[in-house]
Image (spheres, rainbow, N blue to C red):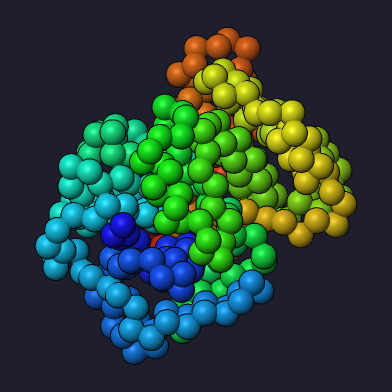
Length: 316
């Protein structure tokens, strides 16, 4: 199976590197700047699960793609989705499967409109990675999982074939018969974490140590759960219990990557992670849904974006 990994940044570089290490047929679709960097330094990963160094990893520029790939792993930020779509158009054939690992749901609608529902899978990953100044991928903890599946549910022959390629590659890979449910459950957690830590500019432990902080996080979580339920994807009891434990853990240093981006003056996924959740609350037409805390957090994030666009916030 020929696999195209879109980008060799933090997430794409990590999972694509592990797949290469396991002997899979992987090519990275990169821009010229990253291509030059990889040619000079190779693809390097520092991880508590084992370091990785691949000299001269297989790369291609969008303009040089000559035939479609079997599987495309898409792990860009939401604000880069349009550019990513343009870059993979020549890589998509009649039998290509696109596996996006973005957060939220809006990207599925965009990809389906461009490439057709039959080509777009559901997927998500759980991994904390970043690029350092030298382009090395730094894995920040031991978590590194990927889940994927047919959006209609079940385990198709296509998913079984993809699973055979993605498993056994030094990260946790799961073929899910209910991938959309899993994506909603992750979105509920992530949106709560992003909205709360960005609004308060602090990790969970500091928020719950402040007056009213724990209530704020749990109110956000309850709002997100209500939206998911109204859209037909009520989070499971085990997921809820685990999330509530994390949002009430004294001394917790957990934050959302969106907070790190915000503090570095970088672009953020305000619309995709937080704004679209509020939009789906309204679209569900359930009168009982109210999002006062999420709406406040979204206003806060959009005000940051306005300042950044004006140049009042220094971008890293």
